[in-house]
Image (cartoon, rainbow, N blue to C red; front, side, top):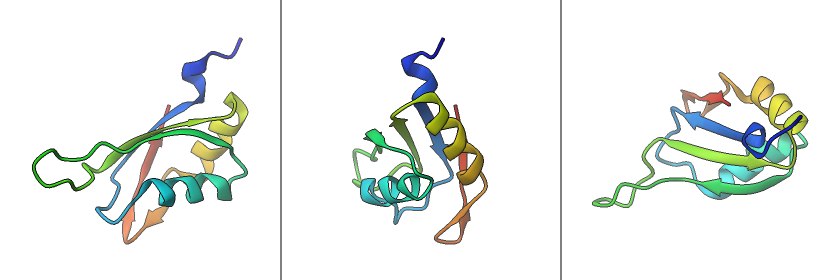
Length: 83
């Protein structure tokens, strides 16, 4: 049985240039529906901290997106995508 957590992915290794729109576009390329993006920022600098959480429409979309995006190079850096 699918749970809400099975739709949520953790991304690490993100470059400073990444935005919520960048993440939405990456996941849209896999055919996934993005329902929520959390891109934590450093309180002092306002820069992204290098990781994010993304919730997708369903568990199948999350699995497919993880397989397609884990290890992809974004702005010269390999990213990690995990459940």
